[in-house]
Length: 385
Image 1 (cartoon, rainbow, N blue to C red):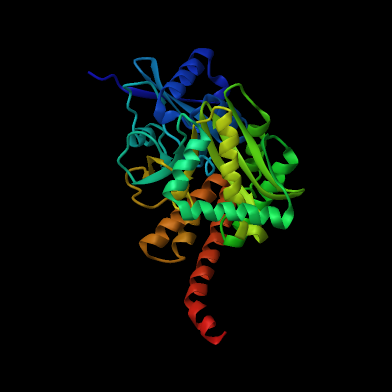
Image 2: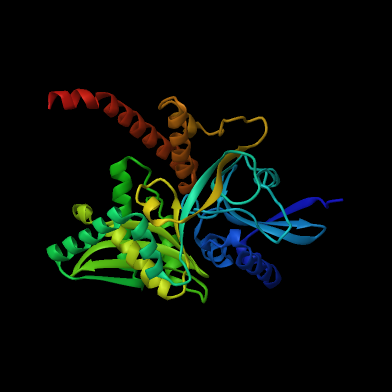
């Protein structure tokens, strides 16, 4: 007979050495938990920064069988560090299954929103993330295989590199950079990109910016975060912030000089970063969710995750927040509903106060309506041009 699953909600700083040792063992021996987001180090650092941070400790018969780091926004629960946490699930030992629905029920969440759940669960739908699994021979062997498979694409990138050098000067890439000013520059570039796109600026709330700085400045023996920076002569042309642990390297926040888009500086930086990091022993390079066109030319492996919103029985699809109602009025259709749901998840995770969430939802609703109106008027404007 299976013992009843019980949960205790505690702060990360209350975890004792034995529990942390279990966490470290499970996250480093289970291949499904290879992402840096599952490491105790990520939770320990993020818990100092993220509003509403806590750890669910699951037990059977008094014995610890799993952990789930998370944050609360009123009655809503998200993975710790959302909306920036790309992978999440229960950190548990072999043979222990604690499903998505179990977690939502035990945490008594009004809603549990997970865009990249790894582990058991029935709610929501499957999505794919994509990766480069480096062969034992290293980057050179990977590049030869990719170039033979996608010759036209890689020849184009080789031409782009030559063009960039001809225009601005010799290219150099620096890896393992930890510079607060450069990180702020990257964050400012990303924030401007979000605003241009009509998306919620995830860095406007403040704590998300602090989290990236904290991760970068608190380096551990087998865990850390750093920048890779590409220069052409003395001009910064591309920059990317990544998280890494063990042999797993997770590309996280990239940005490049928009005026040089024809030279693909962001793609060139990713390639050079893999070469540098591969030489340091990294073997898996995670590019997150599939979607961007370039990823199919890079990635040779994938992982299935679940995107879901589990609501408390009786609430149906309603999130129970006035702000979501503002978003819901912006339009109809499944694709639009999915887009609005994702927008709301980002706003809810970023904004720790109800006022902030309502304000963010109102701005997002206006942006969605304006974008729809612009699409409807688009052909007419072209015709009169």
